[in-house]
Image (tube, rainbow, N blue to C red; front, top):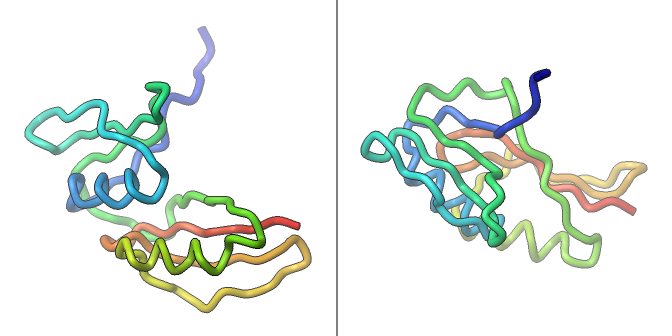
Length: 117
């Protein structure tokens, strides 16, 4: 059988803290907690595995998620993510395709919020 994608997995020094952030940000839940919190899997309401979190060193820039929202919701969603602990890397900007803001999860894992036209 050829290889197929299972999960996007983040190395993080704080898997449970990362899980709290991503569960709140993306409406996921912890569906697997192994090795005393060193390996977590986050799933959606239908039980589909979406994100893996394993204890380890963060290597910023190695991978990031692009989250999407509507243009109308963009500013509110930036504020909601910041209230959950996300940190702005740079101010939101307008690009030909829409709006984007670069953020990090509280442990430094980068991600973007995009609103496409």
